[in-house]
Image 1 (cartoon, rainbow, N blue to C red):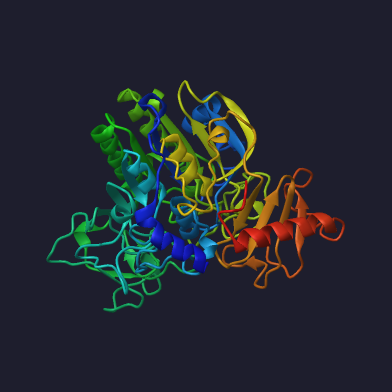
Image 2 (tube, rainbow, N blue to C red; image 1 turned 45 degrees about the vertical axis):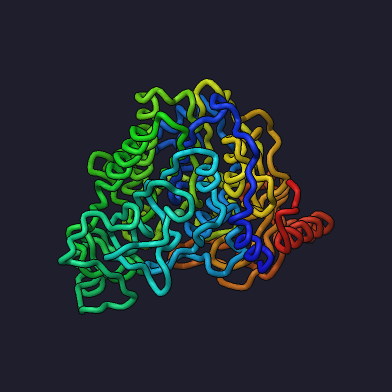
Amino acid sequence: MIRITVIATISLALLPLAASPAPAADRPNIVLLYGDDVGYGDLGCYGAKTIPTPNIDRLAAEGQRFTSGYCTSATCTPSRYSLLTGVYAWRRRDTGIAPPNSPALIKPGTPTLPSMMKDAGYRTGIVGKWHLGLGEPPKPEWSGEINPGPLEIGFDESFIMPTTNDRVPCVYVRGHRVVDLDPADPVDVFEKNPDGQPTGVTHRDDLKMDWTHGHNDSIVNGIGRIGFMTGGRSARWNDETMGEVFVNEARDFLVRNHDKPFFLFYSAQQIHVPRVPHPRFVGRTPHGPRGDSVVEFDWCVGQIVAALEELGVADNTLVIITSDNGPVIDDGYRDQAVKRLGNHRPAGPYRGGKYSRFEGGTHVPWVVYWKGRVQPGVSDAMISQIDLPRTLAALAGAEPTSADAAPDSLNLLPALLGETQTGRDFVIEHSGLSQKLAIRKGPWKYIEPARGQAINWDTHMELANSQTPQLYNLNDDPGETTNLSEQQPVVLDELRSLLDSARRGSASVSP
Ligand SMILES: [Ca+2]
């Protein structure tokens, strides 16, 4: 870990990029559409029968749909940290779920996915969820200049939700400033109730969505949140219109920048709790707000792709749709998700989900669409979001030639474009709740022993913690039901060694 830190620090000024960018015609725009807690089984193209997702299904049918696509961690902050830096979050101990006042986790100047794109001449933007901390310690200057943030790690433009939609502050931030903030009513954020304001505990009967665990501090828009906020009343968001707000911001970015190479990271709030879709999506599925939020996410995807078409850049834009971690049913609100789940299987054939080292935690949807360029098909190539920095940099003609930038990332461009079914040799899976890991190589999946609860009873999630080594054959047993660690000691040793060497190291681990 020390080695990584040192390298990350010194590499800034030294980051060498490929000398000459690829010809313009081969340098497409890139749009990364990132769902939040969307499970492998939540989309029609991955088998969902009761949740209509026609927009994503069309892109999957006309592009590449990956059956072994992964995020790196089964929770938001570490997964996003790895996606943007190409460094496994578990190499640092401070990349767990970021609290509302978390300072910026990615230090300015760190080589990142957006900085590589920017160095390649792309206009870079983020719209949507951030959840990677903002500002300097001890906490962001919420009513002043919120710095550092996305603009300091490679984004030219940013319009973000600072943390998550279940956490304060419930405001949008453009660049370094809270949007629509009245200087006479400054906004601030606290861990404890600073002024005796009503909370989800004291005014539970007044809530429009009740909580099941946590989520009972400040009340904003009739919903209890994590943490306390004061002021900023004119700036507070409305959950029901959040999808529209983000889509409009994304469209504006595309309108402003469609005449130059651009990279847009659209980081949706759906389907993270609280699930509060716009009223026109309510009732579109039998599953209540959770299913309806998937429909809203699909609508957002459709709107953004429609904007690409309208602007005449769809045939020169690579679109990726994936999710930051696997699904969860009850994540803190009484929103009918459990009661109305029916036969829907949010993680598809996989066990576990968000927070888990079982496959459901990190084995997520992955669709790649590039009109007229990526051929339709289904790919079994194993690919991880940790690979996006180097893969997309290669596509942009800016592949880093140094191992220092995005050191855990691999260039898997041929696999991403569907030109080969060969991807990673192995993938590392991480819950995000501890430093304990799992690894998949081919059909084999090893989960290293860990103390800690086997099931989180708040979320009813199986975490895969066991003091016994676990080994599963995913070809025969995708649901990870039969532990073969005693029957397959050679395979167990191989995977354990591979995981140990990856943990020690490094960029030098070959694909
Ligand atoms: Ca998430």
